[in-house]
Structure formats: C-alpha cells, structure tokens
Length: 90
Image 1 (tube, rainbow, N blue to C red):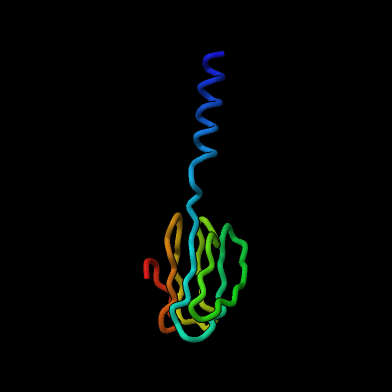
Image 2 (cartoon, helix red, strand yellow):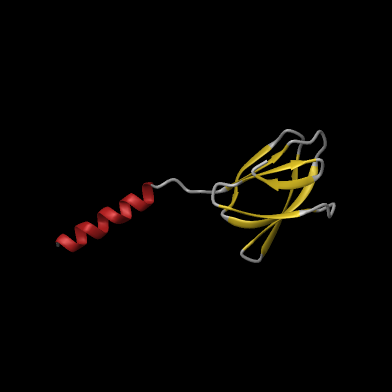
C-alpha cells in the first residue's frame, strides 16, 4: 500500500508540472508561411506580422516556406522571425 501511495503521489506531481512547448513570433512587418516538422509530421502555418503562436510543438524543426532558413527548437524555446529568417531565442 505504501508503494502504491508513493507512485500515485509521483504521478500527480508529474501531471501538475507545466508543459514546455515552443512559441513562434513574427517580428517582421509582413506575413510568413512556415512549416513545422515534429516527429516526422509536417504542419504548415501562416503567421501574421506581430503575431505569436503559442505551444506549437515540443521538439521540432521550423522551416521557412520562402527557403530563407530553418531552426531546431525544443522545450520552452521561442522562435522569432526577423527579416524572413527564423532564430531561436530572438
């Protein structure tokens, strides 16, 4: 019984931990089309000027559709697009 309570307590603690996820920010004055590849699955986004997309992925590659760059991001990274190029941490 004691071991069961320990495991239950640990599971509750993990469930309460905040999830870490990547945010995308477009710091440019024009929209950008990008592709986010996570676990081999690609998703396309259009991000408006000044817009932030939160909790986009856990571990992923962010590629610009214009071919101006790609970055790998994970956990609580913030990918900022400046002058059409993505950068981790802005």
